[in-house]
Image 1 (spheres, rainbow, N blue to C red):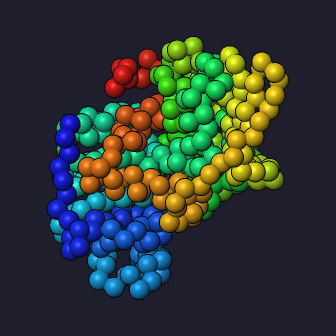
Image 2 (image 1 turned 90 degrees about the vertical axis):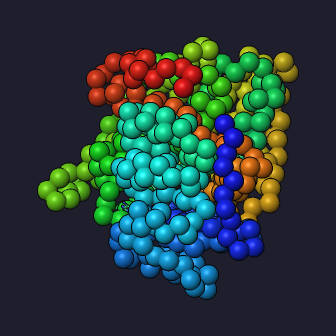
Amino acid sequence: MSRAAPSLGAMGKLRFGVVGTGMMGCEHLRNLLPMDDVAVVAVSDPNHEPLDWARLTMGEKWDGVRAFSDHRDLLASGLVDAIVIASPNHTHKAILDDVLATDVPVLVEKPMCTTVDDCRSIVTASKNRKAVTWVGLEYRYMPPIAKFLDTVRSGEIGALRMLAIREHRFPFLIKVDNWNRFSRNTGGTLVEKCCHFFDLMNLTVGARPARVYASGAQDVNHIDEVYDGERSDILDNAYVIVDYDNGVRAMLDLSMFAEGGRNEQEIVAVGDKGKLEVAVPGDGNLYLGRRSDRSVSPLAVTVGDVGHVGLHHGASYVELRRFCDAIRGTGPVEVDTTAGLWSVVVGAAAHKSIDEGRPVDIAEFGVTQPT
Ligand SMILES: NC(=O)c1ccc[n+]([C@@H]2O[C@H](COP(=O)([O-])OP(=O)(O)OC[C@H]3O[C@@H](n4cnc5c(N)ncnc54)[C@H](O)[C@@H]3O)[C@@H](O)[C@H]2O)c1
């Protein structure tokens, strides 16, 4: 579908609005500020303090920025050519419904929505508009992971058969109004956090997930935390196995009480000819093993031109650049709502598998393939 060209502000700059100016909203601001062809002109947040964080983040570029307490007023202002949604997960659907009714391009943070049904509705709505709808699954742009994806696709390890992703990290941070302490707000840990990894799995394997088996629990973190009389219910560790419809199998090993490790993420792909290992942050290399001579060679990771390294190893900057390219019609929509949907489907299936103690067929969610 051809996309509508935005009407640009003075000097041809894309005028951005950021909805939700907490941790990730301000991170988007920090990434947008160095871009010469972008101007942040509006922000919105129902809480006063995060608006202040936005002001402090923008420094002298805050001059003239309009601050709203409701995204609908920001939309109605007609000030913006593009919107970034960085509000809590459970607010994405309602905000997207409002934005997708306009022709304003939008990047929505992951997870696209907290439920599969809501994601499906967003896929449909996004396909009925011309403007860009982009989902913030930026791990694919981290330099070591981008090289990992390229190397697997190049055929160096032969036909991919197995993929293992380990995330061993620190517990969830404290968020505004503690929204992330409850699964009903986040979609559950395997949706909230792990949609990143299921997106990487879907991308690396290049097929649709067919069946999910998972085991997980809340064993260590936030167990004694009570908010308004309600105990936090977020899972902090899990093993998830995913069978793909092309026969490839993948697994996720998640621990959120493992901050003592050397790497936050370690990914291993095994094909019929070799094996590829990557770690983030890692040591600047991928490691390629070949079965033929049992050799292991380092492959150096190069970091491209990144205007802001920030919290995600430069990935958010690349993501926003590509989003701008797509808006201007000079690049494709690389992370669309279909990718957003499939990353959530696997997480939702993993939660269902844990809750019901059984393997879960993706078909149970009624998502047709391809969407
Ligand atoms: N891509 C990534 O790697 C990454 C990393 C962190 C967070 N995130 C995502 O970013 C989003 C925000 O997370 P965060 O860590 O910044 O949380 P946060 O709590 O720090 O910030 C959320 C902000 O949204 C505001 N808010 C609440 N309801 C709103 C509404 N209806 N409209 C506008 N703003 C509203 C809150 O006041 C708060 O300022 C979440 O979807 C989260 O999953 C993505």
